Length: 279
Image (cartoon, rainbow, N blue to C red; front, side, top):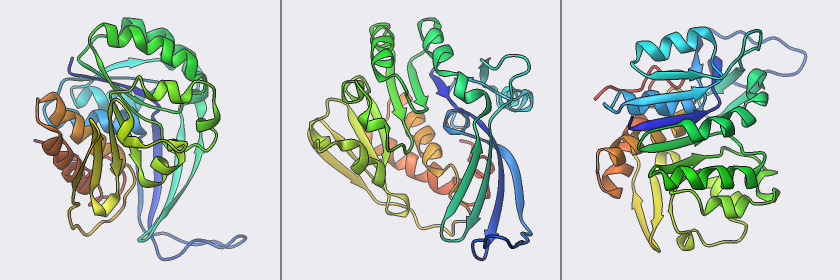
């Protein structure tokens, strides 16, 4: 297995092409609606699988999401138990920005199950897409994973409380490839210089491309000009493209370039899945 993608998944219901944000107490009609599957673990997995990598997803999945992944030739380990509700996100998307409301469902119960699953995972690379609540436990659990020869990447998403949690900065040093957007890079730095982190730190800059810090050196790759329809999931698509190239033994620049291309392609359709290209 090239890639094991572990983390949260969602059913995404996206109202897009809104001309403006709805006002409280009023109804706004929308002519474009997409129902699809999302979440960092799923989108990164599909993006990498469509570039020819062998992939497994470990998450709490709805039955229909599990069936979809199997059609994509992705191996599935479903941690959702009978009677547990899957997570749902409703998105509102204008041409300029987006907003979300999320029902977490089983995702709130998964951290202990993820930690218990780590010793049984086998592959070349482990990607994590979730917010760690117990950073010390994750640090302890990931050390044996690295000892088994797997490299590790993580995309935390945005959480203002995360940087305050005990063990967070020690956890950062466990991660070989850290994916951040521009605002997260400021939030999670805690005043640290990303050039001094031992692993590779990748900062996604949207239409402006990306930059990476590796071995004290900074590498910048410009973005691609596209007529974006919806940016939902573009960061996770970037992650999948980057990891697909990295696992194909491409160098850092080539990996960043493929990340940019896959991320940009994902914005050409509503939702995170429809625009993901195949190799």
